Image (tube, rainbow, N blue to C red; front, top):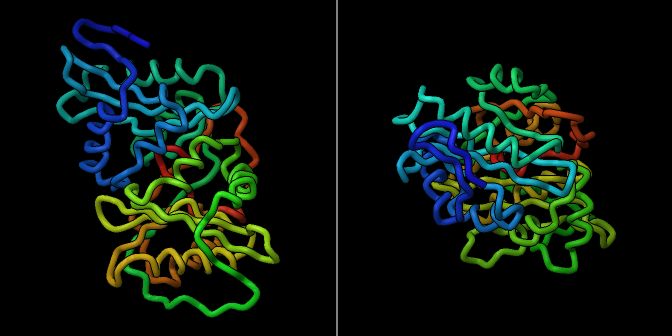
Length: 291
């Protein structure tokens, strides 16, 4: 894909190595990305990462990941401070939306951009609140529930639960996200009840601290078990981030009960027919970049 809306500027597909520049910009914006996210992100849609260049120098980025023929998710919409106010952002946006075509498109929009997203046909479906802090609660003792590291035999049940909570199938992404090599510094756990997966959660190392996401579970008990198991994976005193849908008040209580504090919020918005998400089962979204 190539677009040349004005002299010296073009938008083209980026490789993972090239898009690492945008991850650095996200870090500078305070978004605190995971240190090894890109491999799994690119597994979702290798052609879904675009960058804008002026005379060969990167100035803008957007991720426009396609999930099948009907669904897409937009993120990493950034213009470097040196290139703002020059039309590069809108040109990059148009190239990204062209990549997604007529699909339903979701995004998690920062407050400053929400009015612009509405002008582009996006409608609000709910708020996500970022909670961050050093967890204070010890893992509760529960009976009848088993938590263990995710294994290949859990894949089908993880995918079914994920589709309910995310709204579209994303098997390629999950295989990389959940079953990545240890070098990715991610670990995924499942809750088993009567031998069946009733929830799963991934914790990953970020530029600052760790994030838990997704945290999908059929019950609050399963979510609590997963949350505290993830917290137990990191060294005491490490900061944990959980991005919680405001619509799930049980999830808010878990975050607040662990001593985490709200620091940031986004709006989950969709262009087109929004999927019927099961908010009571979404205790933590996967990422603001890929939904």
